[in-house]
Image (cartoon, rainbow over all chains, first blue to last red; front, top):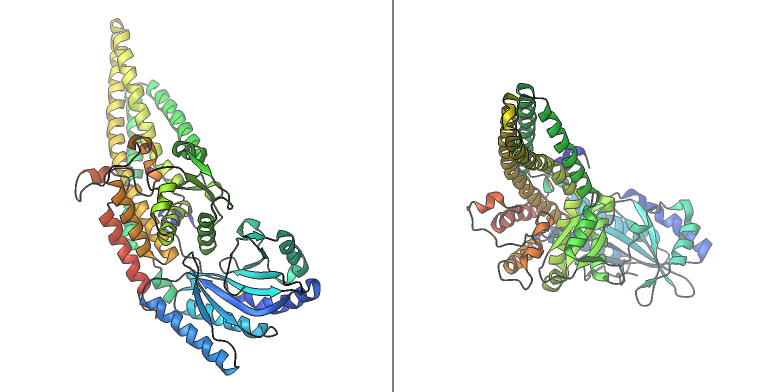
Length: 193
Length: 319
């Protein structure tokens, strides 16, 4: 924020960075090879809904678009859930080996929100992974930072920090990780995880 | 292009805020000119008094800026809480920070019967956000989020720094009034026999006091005006961030409705902190009354009218 904006007390809504999301499929291969975690095939986009008709229409269009594309391949329809913080999660489910398709779906949500001027409402995207021991892991993409961080929930709102740091080490430079650990915020009970 | 129109800055507000700051700057320049005028016309010793006031006032301003978080937390009797202690509150702050791309402030809770919230700290990295237990009890999660977004906008706009800088002039003027008052008292009483020189001192002191009083009065009104504009712009940024101006509106109405009833706790306990609060701890003045000129916060009607504009802006069809 510039000096003038400070003086005049105004903030410019932060526009999301979208391109880095496409690094995910190749990072998933590294993750599988290094730690045995495979994508579950589900992923979600989390965004803050705006009140009013305008945003509701955009959301409906996105949903119809995604349902159309998944219907062709016999996949599951997308679901929209609202969490206790008032954020909406649009969950898209694919087969576990269709990570490219999933990322394309998630990107379709992003770009329609951005095209309609609601880019600043995007919070994060989540792609779920699991290993043979059924441990859960999510790679979360922060739109405003253009960075990823791992999130491994355990029972009772605790998180497996060791696993998270291991995943960061395994993937290494394949993904742009969020350097500020304070921004690795938990998303308990996130849909799609 | 659509993005630009939907989140366009409020030009009217920008213009009014710029005008207020310009006037404040103008008062500052006039003040300095008057001091120099008094100094050269009468005696250089007045320059030393002014210097003393500037150093003392500057020290006070910097000190209060630097320790603003600690002072505020102590005044409000607030305690910092961990994510384990207050998971919902931290969850709201986490999400808003990620949405606004801001570093996360420390989170505190104050055990109080007044529904309120404030954010302070010398910069975004040292910011602390505090809500009262009563606010959390009274508001729905979305309303609470609106209030927190408003407070985080204060942090993003660096309002503590801006208001401290704006108050600097008033602090110096207030100090000078006091110095000149005692100077006149002692200068006048001390050496009646020494003639001309003594009379000079009395005139200097009187002139200093007169100028300081005018500067103090004018800058006081301007600072209050600036404070109200910054509240409006925090409302605006907060509502744009959450995308829910109506949740903020209903929070304002709930909180203000509560404020105008008789609270359980002594109001004096909350008053020194008013400038940083979400809604000040006093009865809201009726529309158009003189009290609005001296108030740190805009009237409820005004705040809601501005949020209505945000609502319309967000709902505008793109294209």
